[in-house]
Length: 98
Length: 111
Length: 121
Image 1 (tube, rainbow over the protein chains, first blue to last red):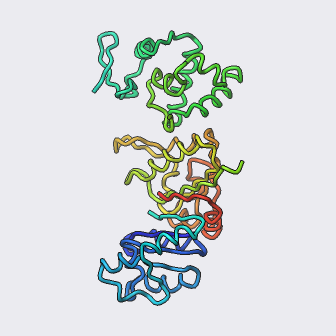
Image 2: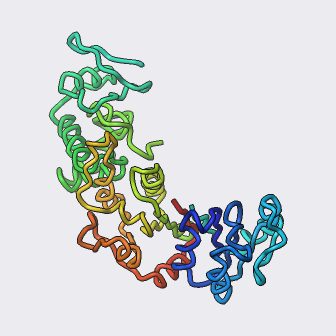
Image 3: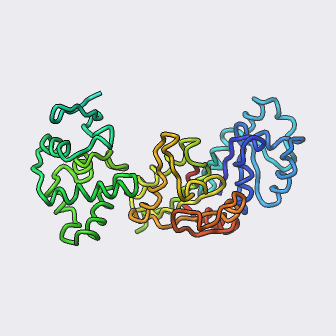
């Protein structure tokens, strides 16, 4: 299952809830959720821990727009829009957490 | 805003003729709406209208036709809890027509 | 029948503060008309939607909580609430206005993985 998150984890609990409830699968961070994928963010520890259970992706254009493309946490894989589409088709289900 | 006039009083409705304010409803208004819908209200009609009013009072929604049919069957018996019977009373659909006469909003999911 | 899909609606927002809870309820009622396998999940502040005793007169907003009790009549009987979300809010199963199944977070996650469609509100 693919979990899509679009809110900063420091402003909204969607990512926290996703990590609490979902046990495995893939996560895609888009829009303001890309902040979660950056080194030095207060959420970094939780992302590193989550990498043991999930494959985590981050949308490159959203990172670039925010000037943070150069500090992605190691193990998080950047994807372009094509990669985004691939993730939605290779997973049986998607959940967009609001 | 569209409206209807009954016994010299004006009641606001939506574009389709459903009462805007639930509390505006009374028997005279119901009879008037039924008349506009070409329905001659009988005891059997009132049974359904009163049932709908009670359902709304309890759940705050107008039931979908399927749900209404089942619930009527439970309360008034299987001979009344079927669509043939309900459509014979309200030919344009028990959901739409009966809810309108009962002063309820259009049922959610009513297509 | 093979065209029945498992639909899960995930409710994570408190009622009244935003429109999400009411919108989710309306979508659920509409989905019921299509005879699908529907589950409702309440997580995080979404558990507040099911709190007993809501009185909305003072805020001049429609109290839609009685509609959760109508779901049974719509053949929607799978309501799940996350244990951790209840605990974090000091709410117990007895505080809820409908019968629900309380699941721990891992069981909830497993249930999510079994669905064909998951819609989050």
